[in-house]
Image (cartoon, rainbow, N blue to C red; front, side, top):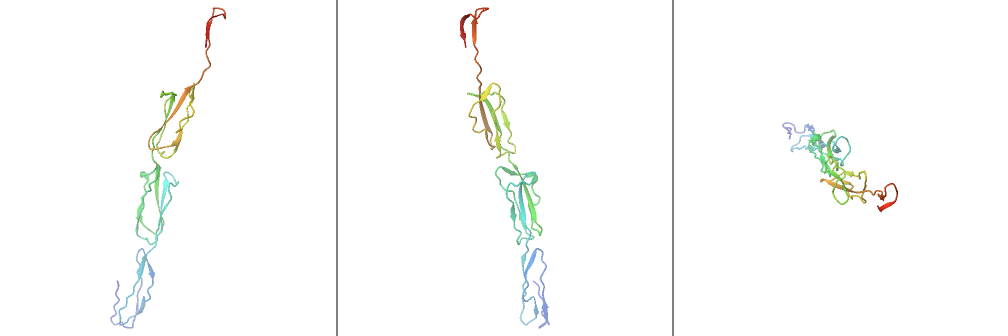
Length: 219
């Protein structure tokens, strides 16, 4: 508070003025900001409010670009100039925050200029997709298993297909999980194959030098 002495000033004019206060704005000029000294004490009251700051905008992008993985967060700067703000990453299905690219301005102070905070996210690792190719009726492998990596693929789709194996046809219907979504655990997809039909073999038994049958023909 300020006190202006009234000693020897009855009837004289007085003046007051607002203060310049960082981050604050005067609400209104008091009606008695200027006047005349009287026999009664005079109180002049100035009211201030915290000034408005610019907003803080928090972006949530896929690592390596500006593809949003969640909507922006807007932290209003109304009446916040000079106050502290804090932000944090979101919890997103199938994603984790990229710890190698955390924002340096995740926390700070509201200013008159807009502030942008960027969080980057990458897909979580999932389990593998392992594709078996077995002979029908068992677990005898006809070719080596195929493996689809799950690195950075949590929640993404996968697709498999039967192999082309000489002398074999794939059994229909195929596996119900031939296509699907990468999960936290390994997925096994199994195709079964049956040996193709061949042409028959006919065995003849002839008398030497002739076509005279000496034993029944075998088929």
